[in-house]
Length: 87
Image (cartoon, one colour):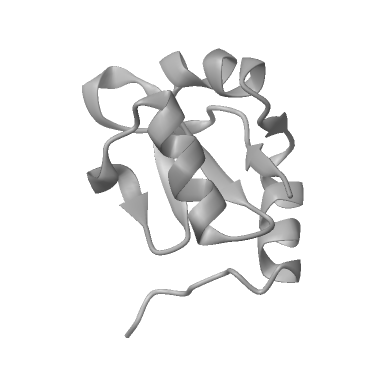
């Protein structure tokens, strides 16, 4: 069971860079961890949370594993938790 976070490489609102927060185990684990971080439910998007760069260090200090974006996606798909956008 691992929560993963990629580098804050994605430009987003408020002029901040953003990361993706996922679990390679379950969405329940992901939601619980996001709650510990104080990330609002509206930040959840299908299979991940979008979190600002200001949360990255706290996530790692609470146990999230910092990985590359490619590794994060590989493990999310491998866990069977990847949910693609509907057309």
